[in-house]
Length: 143
Image 1: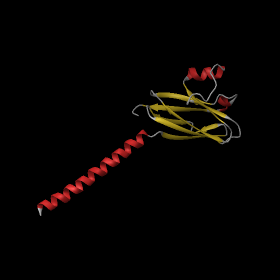
Image 2: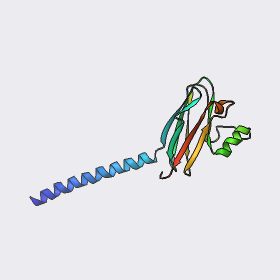
Image 3: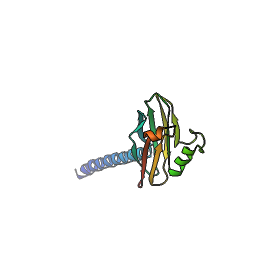
């Protein structure tokens, strides 16, 4: 009888370990998938205008422009934004942090931020920044 109990106990323990391993593997797989953050452009404003992401993890931004005019989503530090304001930055859509979103459309871009800190996202089309098309990405340590 004792042997039977040990067999059942071993079987239950084995199933428990297998389940825990599967759940752990699933969690690791999910943490390696890009984090998806939707941003809507509505009445020439970003919603939300502030997002927080972990350093070192791929983040897919899904940006939906509900306005009848084109917009930009350009992420960077103060120096990058100053170059865009001055018109000395090259054409957009080459970098994942600089995209144009045509009127009534959606664009996806995936970015992995390498260092913690805060960056702004701004639309640099004429008058849009002054109107309030500014947001912040806060990158937190701990991936």
